[in-house]
Length: 310
Image (tube, rainbow, N blue to C red; front, side, top):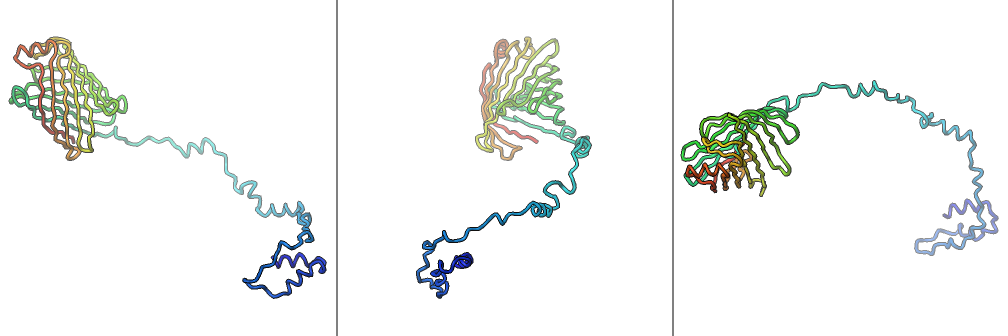
């Protein structure tokens, strides 16, 4: 501040700033001494700066603008306008690439393979399904049955062609072959299968058999994860028939239902032992035919088995 004051005050009358001049001739004060009081200075007597003399003329400004070579106005190498030919070159048509639906995959699930404690003896029951194919079209195989005291009570095998109609649903059509009960019988099948809301797996299949016999089956199951490995699975199955068939112990209308509850522990994802209960019941004419044969129309069973897939 002292240096700037001396420059400004150099052009002023020395008589007006004698006190300041004397102060400049004094030796510098130490840090412990009192600092000068700048508030006592008369700044009104200081000369004013004429900013008008600092202006530049247009010629000087143009010279400064020319220093960047006009880079701020236009590019030295202008970017050409994007054309349709440029877009076609950047995004050419491609023939596509192979996806999963062009290669064969397979999956087999032994959903139930279990011992059942039946009223008339021990029983062995199974329910298996699997497929081979791609993401859209697949060959589905289904099989289920039951043996009681070493005698086959029921057994069937289905071969179906499945076509995906959405991310979670397939339409299936094919044939079903019944081996027991009674003499073998062949059915034509048409149905839908897939996963509904909240991972509820469902199957609905209609059948037409020999001599105009018709049937329908509805199945569903749901996995409740108690832990990552401990899973509770409720199941349900409903069977209906269009005609009475005494040879096979079948009556028209609602024939029978089966519900179950199984608790499995997945030692590995592909293999899980389980225990549970199942309850089946016959209705209407089917119940009457069962009673005539001395069979129960309603029965609860303890079950224990394994579930595996590969």
